[in-house]
Image (tube, rainbow, N blue to C red; front, side, top):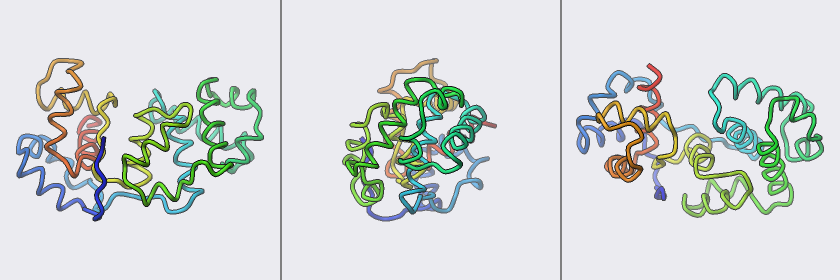
Length: 212
């Protein structure tokens, strides 16, 4: 489980850490170092966090282009504004027409209901340890480990998150470390442990290395 880091570490500290603890990783990702953000982005309002969580649910098992297209369609069928209220009142056929599966529609409805009835406070997630935030999120139907890890990384700006179930990260690590395809999860986690407390930055480097 990712650990909570009270400070807000940045790119420079992360790269220094990688160079010290994993010179091979540091060298293999050098072409992408300049592209790292100086600080991880953090959504600030409930509306931004909610929209980001909706986007992550839609992106499950989809490529970026397809996910972006369906996100815009969902937003349109919800009246141009994503909110718990707009998702709850939108009927299932409209989501199906937008390209959502029944399972993803159910997940969006579950997320919207949790925020609407205040059993999930998205702003509170910014203030509590990662383990606690993860536990609150995985209680919601349709939010598995990958969705929670993406939300922690890209929306809450947590610096020490790694997703061993993300295929892009897995393939990038297999290439960099010359691992067999579908390497055991334990092997990936053991490598990633060296990058702590900057595993999110390492993940960004892996994705960008994979993309290029």
